[in-house]
Amino acid sequence: MKKNIAIIMGGYSSEYKISLKSGNVVYNNLDKSKYNAYRIHIFKDKWVYVDDTNNEYNIDKNDFSVMVSDSKITFDCVFNAIHGSPGEDGYMQGYFELIGMPHTSCSMYQAALTFNKRDLLATLKPFNIKMAESYYLNLGDTINEDEIVDKVGLPCFVKANKAGSSFGVSKVYKKEELKAAIDNSFKEDNEIIIEEFLDGTEVSVGVISFKGETIVLPITEIVSENDFFDYAAKYEGKSQEITPARISEEYANKVRHEAKKIYTILGMTGFSRSEFIFKNDAPYLLEINTVPGLTTESILPQQAAEAGITISELFDNTIEEAFKD
Image 1: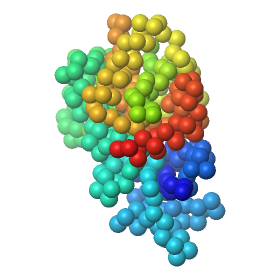
Image 2: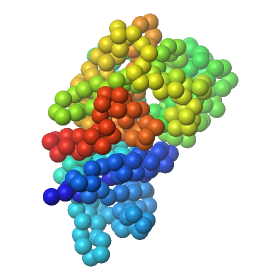
Image 3: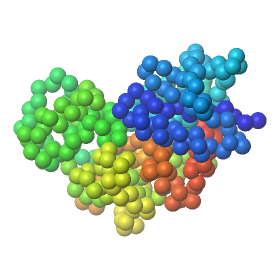
């Protein structure tokens, strides 16, 4: 009997358009002989099932079911394609865990931890994971520009602490540019992180649970046409994403080891995609994505294809893994 799969997409953050694209890629590539796929849009003002003619049906949040033509549809598993809040920060995971619904992403705690860059770095520091020098600010704090520059140097990156897809990120070259960059980051979050600029090769490493095993996918090298790997570089073709990365086997082994070590330390399940920059022959962690982009342009599907895993196999496997948890 075919399983009913709810593909959740949208969300409450600036990333909702990318999430809708990811969700539709999942919808179009799920094995229709095994699954009945349903597109579920999650927005602040509505949770709705959207059928193929764009009719909307309200989701009953008591048990995550939907009534269509006087018939109640329930789901066997949720495929999480929400980037940002509430799909990547733990809220949806907590809700599904409370109602006993299998889902494809990591658990609530891991999602909340990895979504908060500051908390993630603090958690991993005792495990000797290398990371950039950083400075923290909360909304309302006094901004001491000299102190910031003394701590992280110039150029530096000003980032929203809890945001993805490079929303709320600026590269700052002069002390005088800090205030505008900080204001930009506070549009996305009330906490920000300011990090030193690491000048080196940037790579992205996917780690997934595949057929019961934790595997590291082929590494992608990021070469941005822009000043850094910003939104345009990620989604508008303003970058080269080279898989496999043009790095030595020594570098590849080092970054594979770190990515898998982090996945294991954090007790991850499902997808993860970690970003690193090499400095002094060592990989420095930038961030981790637990609901990475799943569009045809996205890095994780590119890496899976290089490993000989089709996009349908990738999605099918993550559903099968969700049923095991």
